[in-house]
Length: 186
Image (cartoon, rainbow, N blue to C red; front, side):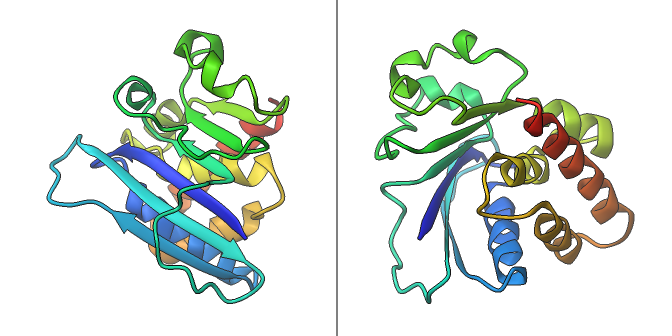
């Protein structure tokens, strides 16, 4: 089972990202589960969502405590909460930032991870360019497809089109593909 924890802030599409990721897995014929975790938070408050993907039915219904992958939609959260709790030693980290990893001051948390398992993508900038809004969720899903073999870019694009129709959906697909291309070069 591949487990993902998505961290962000209210309004960044954390819950929608989890839903689309599970839809993408379903479209690939896999089992998936998306679980949001939020209360009555307001716009900008920390939000987390969980995704599980497996080839077998998933019976767990609890939060993801030991993720294989962290998606960090807002890097200011690094110094607000411990995002790395439970991350596996062979885990992956996808960060929405235009900064170098060294500038984020998270060296101690990621030094144990394998080379190439920390990827940064300027998702907010790509979202502004292609969508006209600072919502990094679909952009990061495109980058995720480039990082490892858990989900394919075509399934991500199909899931985006399922969630968003027409021009909005197509703009999100273009943004996700741009992040996919950017992440491939990392």
